[in-house]
Image 1 (cartoon, protein in one colour):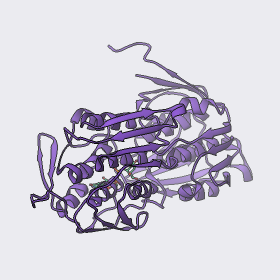
Image 2 (cartoon, helix red, strand yellow; image 1 turned 60 degrees about the vertical axis):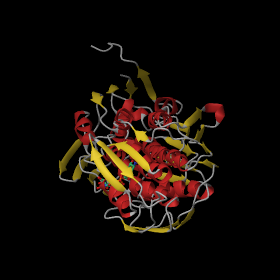
Image 3 (tube, protein in one colour; image 1 turned 90 degrees about the vertical axis):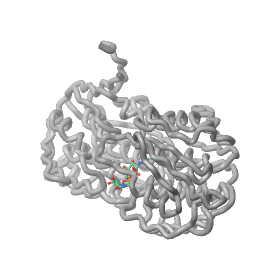
Image 4 (tube, helix red, strand yellow; image 1 turned 135 degrees about the horizontal axis):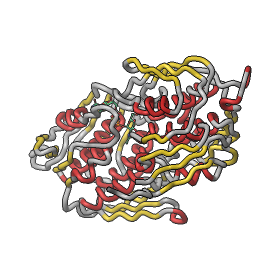
Length: 438
Ligand code: UD1
């Protein structure tokens, strides 16, 4: 298992580029299931979850080509024949987003078998809302041996029916899954209490390019007029707002002067507001943000200040930035509270940050961070994708050399993180498992 070795203390200086959004790319790849034609996606990030999705689609009979570097991070997907509409456990267990194929598969082929999802270990993470909505559309769902089977109604055409669905709770992939299913349903589907995340809007834009009739994506009410078939399209994925946010905090925590390039500032509103309150200088461009800070070295007016955050659905503060923000809070003067409202059990980074010298206590859904604490290097364990990013940020300012184990969690969602950070002055390197497996 690869590790990162990080020596803290260097301010990050220069320009760092943001990749395409993993959480847009995953549903957009699943959307290719909806048509026999070729779907070409650009700006696909080169991360493990994308490779997992490629395997997933290929195992169902799709042809998927991934090209990176000069190939513009382009992927072409053609689901001419889906001979095996099954999302197998071996693939699904490593990536919960595999449940995104459920809606499109049943809409296109009339049947889907999907293993119950795995993915990040951050709470129970059920998919009951996906199931309930598909049932409302007439699908018959059964569960056996860890697999869900969804069948389109046996009404002659074997087609899902448009209906009125109100999600009991806002769910991002649930909204995406049902949005995709609705594009090929018979009649109109009205979706209420939808997620408004930019990734939903990204997916809807691709679906519209494929011929879907969708209104209201990006708001809490989406109306879909089902069509008989969709066609191929070419689409460019939006920048990853969570990667961009992680780099903003990397610049701020290290006392750097960093240009975060190829990002979409409009998608980062809540984080930008909190960073500015914390005393971080941000200059917003059209597709870049310059971040400047004195980091933990600041004092008086240049000190980082404690600011409370509370995670909410978009456009609120993203749960996917909570851990990274907490790393910054350890270097801010005063007491910050960090409240996690979206997922239970999403404080796995806390114990590792405490081992590095942070002063954090957790009561229920709220962590109280007392800053600023000088951080010390340590051997720490990555537990989930964003928790691991927080440990990288902490290690960038820790005194000495930290070793982060299990960086495969980081590789799930950050493209060449160590190379990008090294390019702006971080001392970070990847190390293979020198001791091998027992
Ligand atoms: C997506 C993102 C993830 C992000 C999360 C919240 C992708 C691939 N992943 O995950 O990075 O952290 O949004 O912004 O886009 N819930 C149910 N029943 C369901 C579905 C969800 O109870 O059927 C609950 C979840 O347990 C959680 C909340 O709803 O408490 C939100 O989850 P959801 O928005 O579905 O997260 P994901 O789509 O899995």
